[in-house]
Amino acid sequence: MFDDRPPDATVHYRHTNAGIRVAVLPATCKVGTHSLRTGGYQARADPNDGVVRISCHQCAEAPDVDHFWVLRTTGAIPDLAELDDDPYRHVVPLMIDPRGRGQLPTPRRTIDAPPR
Ligand SMILES: [Zn+2]
Image (tube, rainbow, N blue to C red; front, side, top):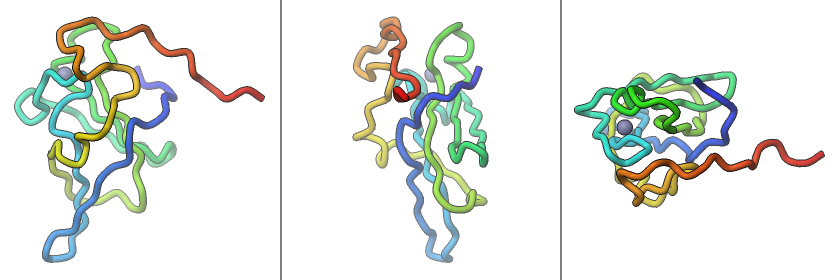
């Protein structure tokens, strides 16, 4: 299910008043139709790839939907995470038109490895 697609964005981090580093993850699934807070999600950090993948449980029901974010991580994986769309409002998901709600995803792009 996971592949080597490039990250959609970089994880936004903030620090609490106590100095605790918190990862801020999108609150809406990549397709733009589900609230991860209410619909359920799974966030899995992949230290090897340096990314965290956030999948939407509701989109996962539908086959062949690009339902997970891939966000580049920086530094150590924080102990805390929270959901907030604000840092990601400018992000254009790489494979799904966020305004195309209710439509089928656009065909997969063919940008893979750079030419050698
Ligand atoms: Zn979803």
